[in-house]
Amino acid sequence: MKKSILIPFVLIANLCLAQKQLPVVKASSNKAKIYTENNQINNWNIDPKIKIDVFSTNKLTTLTPIKFKTDIDSLNFKLKPGESKDFIVLLNGKDSCYTRIQSPERKDFSKTSPEIHDTIPLIINKENTIYVKAVLNAKDTLNFNFDTGTTEIVLTRNVLKNKIKSDLKLYNTPYDLKIGKHSYKANVFDTELTGHDTDGRFGWDLFDGMIVELNYDKNLMIVHSKLPASIVKDKTYSKLDIRYFSSIFLVSGTIAQSGTSNKDWFLFDTGYQRTAMLDNDLLKQHKFPVEKMEVIKKVMMRGAMGNEIPVITSDLNSLKLGNHELKNVPVQVLTGNKPLKDENIHILGNEVLKRFNTILDFQHNVVYLKPNNLYQETYTEQKKKDS
Image (cartoon, rainbow, N blue to C red; front, side):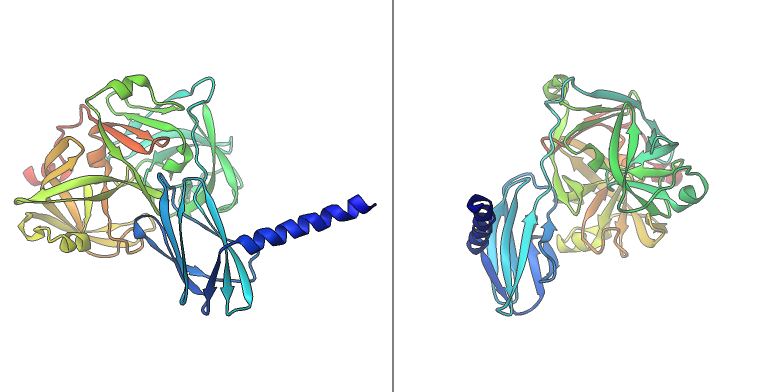
């Protein structure tokens, strides 16, 4: 009898001791900021009613400095990929708010046995949309754009209303999407628009911990559980590090005009059908000579949710990705209504990306690019200009 009573008290004592050992951050306001990778600032609301308040970072690739800052105090620490850090925010000297900052779990399927090398026919249309046939919820065979600029599964509202047989619960219920021989689970979201000839799209995160090969010479998408040795040995590939940002990923690139060059990060976006979209605020910040770029045309584009985006198309002298340089690229200069919630960021689109056979390594967080048979193809805007 004594033992059965003692055990709960020992557990409670240990829990109290663990809580006392947690770092304490003082606050007199319920507003705080969390500084994550690359000094990205995230607003945070301190709420004592939540048992454990959890903030998730982007996918981390290295040991990353994190700072939690209140109106009167701060806490600094470093977070490993897949790690979490618990602490207490003491609000107004009386309310203990248990808080956790965590990075997503590390995924790595390289030890999967037998190895996965799933080959799927890949279609690319004249609008530069890439897509595959996939089966949603074991009922609906649809055309899905592989869009590296998004996450989860997204279907147009028209398809949800008129084409889907499944009774889907949006946003918080994961469903199976069978791509090739394997199925992947993800939540389903709705949107107004998606790529030409497609019913919806799926994001890069379905393959986190895997490797995705896009071979435009053979019109194949191949999902690997382990990077083939032939790719590692092929020195014609350029290797670009991945940086994750707001659940999407970026690679570095260099733009040049009239003797001025600028290296920056670009969203890697196979769902964007044009060449590249340059952020006007970033260009101004780096004093890039936009005025020396020949204006080809001015148009109003629409984002995925149907929002209007004013865009100027201009001729860029050079766009360099790794060791590969593309010259006289008609790029879009974004002047307002930014696609990524007012973030200043350049975007690489599929009229550029399709020119490279691509390896997306989500185990080692790198992209490999190799010029293919589309590398010298005339850009759409140049065709229109010449005609």
